[in-house]
Length: 398
Image (cartoon, rainbow, N blue to C red; front, side, top):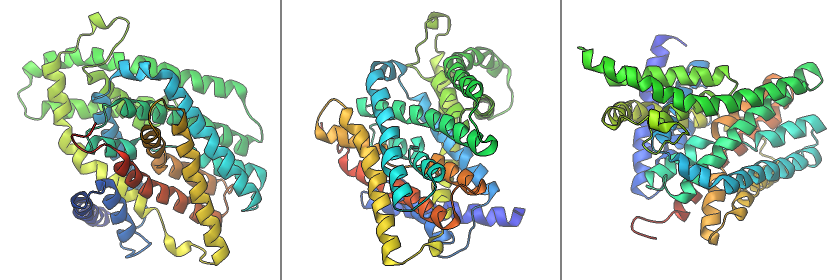
């Protein structure tokens, strides 16, 4: 992608995402719906002005890393721990139910080979952390008990997604599973999640001392972006999604961060607050790029419009919804609370798209099925936030 093309692409993405996001906000819809709609409008589906490229994909990933950083900075680890059993139950059902429902449907209805049907089902087990948490954040619900439950389950889902993808990739490439490699991957992921937040907290102390000596403006923003990039790279190195690196970098700044030896790692709050606030303008600029990219990735012109194909597509969308809504049934509370958690697990987003693209590249998912699979991912990503927004308590409502 040339520099001219990149500049005009960013111009269109930022302009249309802002306009359509603002329109959606004014009519009571989540801004993320307008941003995904902007991608559909700009991409191959409607105007055809933009194509999904690796450059835009990388910028989109940076956007979701920054979004996860801001969420991590406001997260209470104590509440995540207290919701531990429910988090595990929601996440496990949110993986197994859509895997069985959509995998079996792909095998019997789409007539895919067993391994391809399994891959199809695994693709729809993923949950997009960024999309639902953006809706919760916009509604002021990210620190509610449901917000922490959703965050924990989505993180669990993402890690499970990485392990599943590694298993399937290994099997497709080698024709067999390597148990030692899978055990090593699980161990590295656990090690990263345990050690990265306290490491980030320790790094803040020398950075605060250096801030007193700095004579140039923008010290906090440069330092924080450097830390986020470092932890995103470390996450990728450990086998986790890079976006989890952004999350743990934010966690290191959280006032509600807890650790067995936290008395040695007290939060120098005035400085960490400045670090957190310095990233907000960057997050506001880059986070919408991710949601627009989801829309750009969809090409509706490739869709088979025969009545039977459309009926199958509708059935797969319904199964994808039902599989994730079922995850909310284990939540203690009212039916509304159960549906809030279930609907927050519906959007597939970036993880599902990565799965689908890997399946296409390995020739596991046929081209015609790939388009329909991406459409299922896109529709769950588009409609999930709408359902969640309608279910969330309004301001001042209990």
